[in-house]
Image (tube, rainbow, N blue to C red; front, side, top):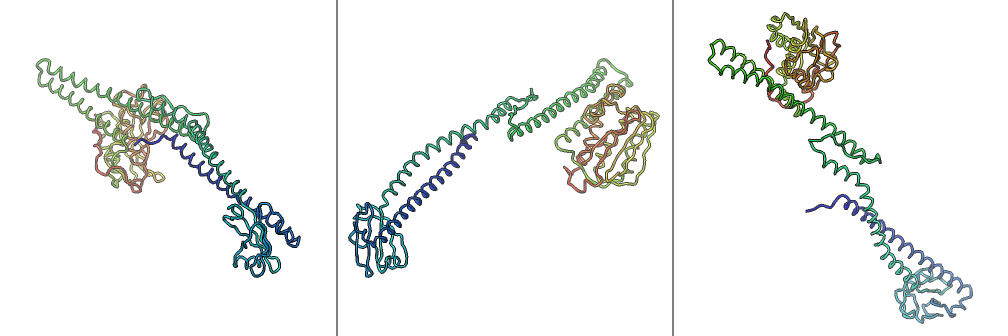
Length: 462
């Protein structure tokens, strides 16, 4: 079933409202005119009754035009009458008239050519004076008004409906312009925006809000494209190296030592591919609405020791020192996710920093802070605002090793726990990266997921 357009629905609603208003006005006008004409007739009857009484009823038999007059005696007999030869009042009406003036109406009086009559009966001593006037002029005036209203009101309603349609069209013109522009916006050119009317009204504010939404969608689409491009680039390198190693191993007969070296190199590239795919899956899961978490109560010292123990051999090989700091505090969170995030911070410090790597966890003002600090050159200023984006890497002081996903995963884990990740200090003080989460946030709300869908932390890189 085809629904009416908004323009037609607005026009119909306006027409119905105008029909109700015009009908109400017509009824009020009709009733008010009838009441005014009735008051005029009553006033004329009272004046005639007073004039007849003032003459001692001598003028009662005189010509009364379209009116009538009667004087009815105490016993109900007709004493005098003009135009009508029978009493106009019955016994009950006579009793009421002797008590005070009474207005009455008669439908069709034969003596007055069947016209309706308005009567006034007033006491006159022991008798009752009755005067009457035809209501023909009042009825004709009301009938004429009704005929005019039946012609004017439909015309007024048509004009009002047409005006309503024009107004609805003008009001919805900016909406139609925005609809046409929205139909033209595609993923190939998401930079277009909806045209905004200069009125500054609700429609303009709606358009501005939609344009802000389009801007956010464009930013998200650009991030997705950049993510796919960077992921493709990162996957291409280990795949190319793996293919090269295998092709070289098959090109001619190899010694066991050469085959072992080729297989070892291929295994290293396969491990890199596996780690990269795992990290990409984590970020994709986080982007779809949050990482699934398996919540439990943890010892912060145990968490720090577990992570630093994993990197002890690598640090010793590189002549570096890991310095875990004890706090005795506890936290509620996902063990594997927090170990993964903290491990990424330590890996970054060993990969890009220098000197001692301090690993600290403590509760500050109801917030758990996991801090990893090194003594290197710090985080370059140009990278600071984008450090937690996927594939973000410095182009100067940092090497190009790694895929640039470590800090992005740290940020995703922090947000999944209701917290955030940040970089403290400046480049002169070395890099200090902080992962902060509410100490009891997981007790106050149910986090997404519930199963242990988290991936294992990345193994130590030697």
